[in-house]
Length: 388
Ligand SMILES: *Cc1c(COP(=O)(O)O)cnc(C)c1O
Image: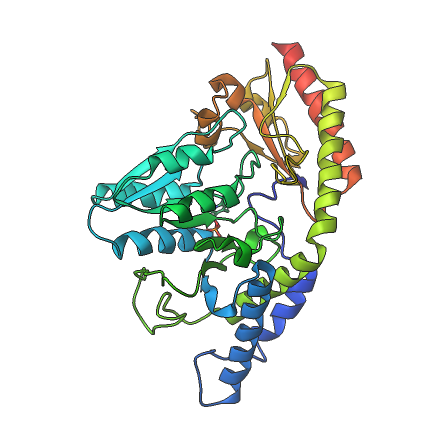
């Protein structure tokens, strides 16, 4: 297998997480809604514990956590949930660099008669909070801005955006799939209304995530996506996947304890990769903000390196890098690749976008792997440049 450097796509389940999950597939397989016997009680206890672990990582009360199948569902529940509970013709503000799991639900809502404004970003992929505020209209009910970008790693000034939203009485939703477990998040101090997270981006299994719904007044009104047994405060019907939820809880606890040291380690590895590539190759552009915090706030995800290579064919580049698992700067891997909407929104020229690589370093990435990657990428790019 190639060296795995694609942790923004998904992460392996941490061995400690898996260990805690295993009993809930067989010995303790109960339905957490079964109130008449010990199988149900044990399952309910496990779910309660996990709910508290997730809540603890984000500094919210456990009732705020609504378990979903992942961040895609959480985003759909937040966006469709708020707009469908609002008057017809209500309006939402978002940004050009959101994940498809935000942009596509909004496209559908637009077809159904809701208003959507998309705010641009600068060359580093940063949103200007003032532009968000300026896009708010009388019909606006919701603003949705991702916490950290999954391609170029840009961290948005969410606190400032939230402050401006609150001044105007707006709800704020954030897709924090890349941020939770990587960056310190304290929702009590920010009072952000809705936050989506995904288990498989933080070393929990695929198929589990959550929408965090601010509690207290004024109450957030959300229309559920589907009806059924009324689980999760009627917001998400369906039998809870207990083992997956246990995994998410365990992963959140590990993240709480290890996030800070892990971020330091990942930043060192990212620097090693950037500096190594820069020493070996010319014609590189590193996309997104720098590593250094600005006024104490980090601007970039610790494990993200995004680089464009001048004078290389993007399709040939990826086809010749089979020893490492990375993502390209294109939207798809079809015969006719398109630049990603994120790089386009940042104004990266099309040919450079297509000749870009996203490295996503993670918990099991080693300095030896980075050394190999530097050599391997440098030799491949030099060979491809030599041929053209
Ligand atoms: C991965 C990801 C999603 C989708 O999450 P799933 O849990 O796979 O549905 C949404 N938004 C961002 C920013 C992501 O990185």
